[in-house]
Image (cartoon, rainbow, N blue to C red; front, side, top):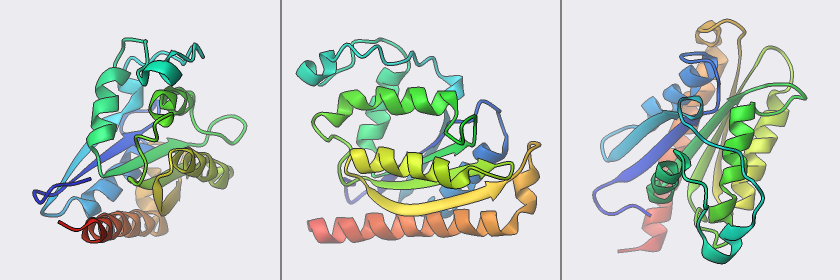
Length: 194
């Protein structure tokens, strides 16, 4: 967890569309949680070269993924973070994007030793009309598998990039999620003591 110097929060957008509605929502959460003492970093999974998990199970023995790609640097950021925000648009089957599923699968190597345990997680989903609940559930399941602490979710509607900016409820939910992330991180730090 964080030192006296503050907290680290990583926001991951799993949208293939740069500067789209999911990016906007994740950034809104980070803008709210990013107050003095909180360092935030926004990352786009689609901008990284991340190969699918090959189900070799090497990580069960070694605790490390044998695939050498951009996930190696992302593991370090996730392990250092106190809070993790994951956002995805709704894709086919009312599920996370393909980029999101590949990222989810590749966290398997840190699952064995529960290396993300007790980090605070926030979910973001953006849909055209349907499927937001399914995406939130998928992200919550990821956090639950890693024994993370869930701060909640924010969901919005939009098709064209920027549509979500007209969804005032969504932007308020994103702000509330950022505040809740900050509150939970501070409460966990107080509970942990000096």
